[in-house]
Image 1: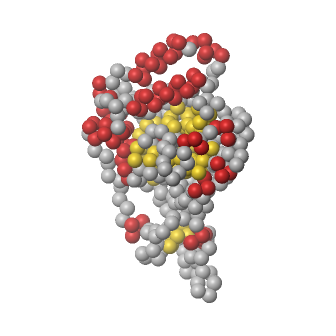
Image 2 (image 1 turned 90 degrees about the vertical axis):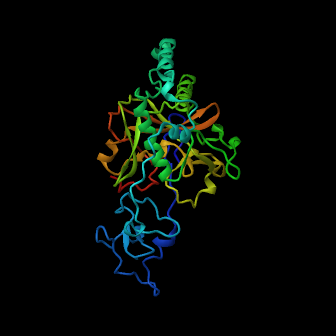
Image 3 (image 1 turned 60 degrees about the vertical axis):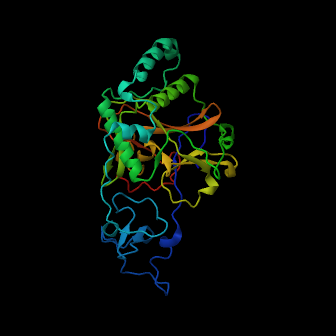
Length: 352
């Protein structure tokens, strides 16, 4: 799915094609003629019939791209419009330390943390001074917010989004019975080869993981936008090349997910043998990565918004997907990356 290269490999979120349930038959009468009276309740147009949905309760029509948040594909099963579904703003997760510690399975209270991030980052800088001059493009560990109360608020915002989407928090790839086994995740199978993550950057990635285990999260908040849905924004200044997070979830074979209507699947392995290609499915188990939005890569202004890149790496022989800042990110700035990579498989032309 994602184009492979021997150098840096950009990856796109895997998007499955919408079922034909609505697009091919919804606007045909019993005699096979188009129904001229079907139009979008938002824009008033009956154009783009393959993008129109009919509510299963009131029969009103809505373009996928006129809905807020936008729908990226025709959903399976019944669909109800905003008026009939009575969707409310997600209920905030309780700002209670014990509940947050339990939700994220934090090893110990970060209120008494020994500041793992700061001490290790300083030691690492001292120990690797010579390496910096030889390789300037070194990845950086995220710098957590110092205020424990603010970190609570950041984690509560993520817990709110995960709970609203029915997702259990995890921060690693999951291999479940009936899906792809861990042995299937072999970077050697990547078509054209995969970029190897250097040992120094592996140490940085592991440091980020240890910080997360102790409740030292990236300085990010998840906010609900009425237009874009859940979005992620920086809660402090983030430097270029900082590891934002790893894209995680259940690992499965692509062939098992071709008819899946999930909109957050990510390519993990693009194998020469298509039957061995793998995807990450964060719909049931995931982290903050699934809420980072995509740019409109049909628009120059949309492309300017990109501040994160999505890169697949060979990490000790296994494929991993990292979201990395591709420029300095200001506090309050929303995070965006390109869902499509080298291909235009995902319809982003109506993204804001």
